[in-house]
Length: 369
Ligand code: FAD
Ligand code: UDP
Image (cartoon, rainbow, N blue to C red; front, side, top):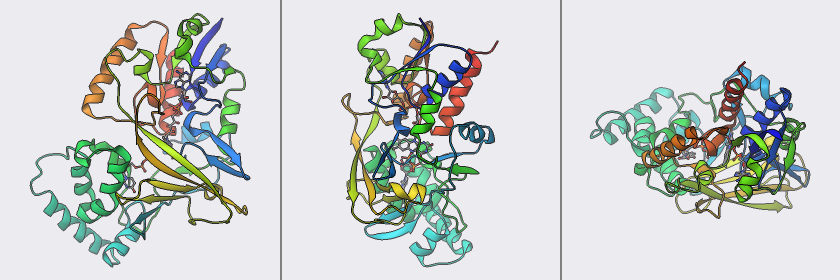
């Protein structure tokens, strides 16, 4: 008999498994994929650590989380400074003085501010109250030029919807700066684990029994009988057999290529912000670790409509889905000895630091005494 049956070996399940094992609890980890690590998983190919499920850059504003994660790996000094490719022209991201300088042929923060301010006023003269959707939020942050070239096409590809039909919160993740600073994040701590993410998971799961290619939902009763408590980090609607209907997700397809050249794009991440290019990003994996290998590996990231045969990468947190999620949460509360967590179990657009925080909060609640 196990104390916990943990479903999903992503960051949430694995942090919980580590902390529970440390407290003497017997844990069984079930993972339906053929590897541990969830979407953070990296594999080594041509001596390059490949981020199989898209670029994963660790950053946090919390010293506690930074110290926590560094128990399991050394981190390098990588700073994410992606580029935007708009119809062949290259601009810096996030939106900062380097972007504005190239866009408007200006040089001072005052000039940039004046342009943004006049564009905001023109675009928002009919807007009453706080921005209600992503388009209004973007226009009120950066004005029409930045919106049209860097946000509209990318966002519509990424989410498969018009910017007017998306929550404003999505775009608030990206900094806007009147300084010449290309760091995509504001967090004080940032880096990539040397050697990739998978060794972190090997350490987190070292005292836990792990079964790969094991889908909990296919043998639910059998697994429920094996443990006192279940922690489920898959999609909450799948656990309840879609009783109230399906929550919506956005899926992705990654196309990897090995190239016989040492350097393809000179930077880890390039965003293709026009509407026509079918992929949103190309990542060149070696640049996450300053690689000097003879070959290089790139991945193109194509957004896809989600259905049950595809991986659910992003929750779509609009009001319709939030209301449906609330109904599933009510069901979850009625179940005994059942916990949910992580990006899919909590239906939250969580980054790695949020997932670690949430897992450690659950640990505190579970082992309070
Ligand atoms: P997951 O990693 O999704 O793990 C869930 C696991 O559960 C999966 O392995 C799945 O196979 C398994 N599972 C599901 N159902 C079952 C079942 N029925 N039976 C058995 N196993 C099951 N965060 C950052 O901080 N920085 C970044 O740069 C960053 N980039 C990202 C880029 C992309 C393209 C994506 C999609 C996410 C990115 N993230 C990033 C977010 C990060 O991936 C998540 O915060 C984190 O991986 C979530 O961990 P999790 O454990 O909640 O979920
Ligand atoms: N976004 C954009 N243009 C870009 C990058 C991002 O319009 O060049 C928007 C897009 O809507 C995206 C959101 O900002 O979904 C958040 O971007 P982020 O890079 O944080 O996305 P993630 O890495 O989570 O996919």
